[in-house]
Length: 635
Image (tube, rainbow, N blue to C red):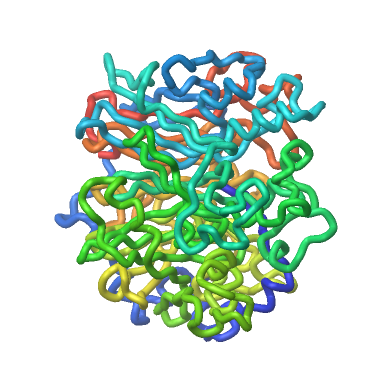
């Protein structure tokens, strides 16, 4: 998941007005006075409680909340056990290709390509034969720390190092089983796979074969090598995995000839990872169309080990955090997504066709046909889905959209034209299927209200928003509705904080910067955070603590801290077994700091997790969490 930075050209940000410019300022006063000021509005019935929360009034949260901490360890409530399952560098289990992890980071690029990637993120559990104790875990690997990935860090640079970094990106599929009371990886599995930044991906949908997708290496524009910066993920009702390509723009070198389109997508002069020096396709000057081949939602069928993953271009190109699926009453798929960048947008895609029985194979073209929309949140608590359809409104050749393929390739520009609402980094979403409700984390946006930038609006109500919020909406009818009603579930931060930008209205345990979300089958909303000590005062950090995972009882509104992570980590990804007796989460980048690159000479400077051994490289890892008595997690 990205930190708080933007990719959008400042002039473009200010040119497309945020809805604060047409909102009634009086409606924004409730931010500093709590939700009471809004209670008399048309949203009052919804604020009183969350629709479709479990009936009966019994409390959903049965664990004792834990205090905030800054310790270098993973802490869970009394009565729970947390066990490391699949750390970076562990072989994924491909038969005959299981190189052991080397603590000095001397594994080759070829070995890394069949090992767990770095910086675990979105994750889902796929039962095998309906089992709650045997299945597949599919997870993203968002990015890498080159200082830890190579024996000498970044002191030298080479094609082999670039190849290894590319191998540590992407997606892993592993087989796991609960044996002798402990979750274990199955060491030789026909299901095990790795998708890297050089693995082949098919292109389908409106952009497939488009002139802007063609390169010298792929003159047909239908096969892309690699997926990268994969962040959050969704599991489809037909059994596939959706992975979002997030901050892909920063892997490219733009040099001094960045055009308006590239600038709108944040192409830097020099890429953050120096790949272009040894893989010329990441040099946008030499291969400008390669830049268009990333930023898509990727679909993977983990239950078909022979299947080719697909970039679904009908869902639009964006800094996709992830993608989550609701189902209309007549059986069509509705895919929601947000792009994690300051002042960017929330989308949904409504499929033309119904979901067919038969799993991934029967739905190979389902996400290639339908309508893509972008959200506008109005100040009166209503909202509208604006169709991103070629030929409608301003999306015409005269405005730079020659055909449907160009609309999805330039999804941001199309959304600018339609006047969609610029959001505070929309990240994970969670869908309440029965209630037709959707929740979305807006992690933070320190540029909100800065000179030349959009100011606060109803949906994004705080300037210099360092704490973030969770927004929710209820569709007016079915998931394919074009209008909705919205409000905020919570504003993160401390209600007693003297800084207006850090004040919140949390009922229960404090947190900052909501990021990951999961709604479990009982109706508990699990919240994960991506806060950094650098954006908080010392006292605030002490009260809020390291990044964590919390549980929200949507009936009572109580939020209770369930887990805290190691120093400087991020808690990412959440998935449960069907019986709700195991919770899998990922711990990402333990020990990372925004201002100090990892030093291979002192790899444990900030964290030794998970081994705890002196001199050990910190490793992102999957963790299995269970109740010691075998009961349902969270009760």
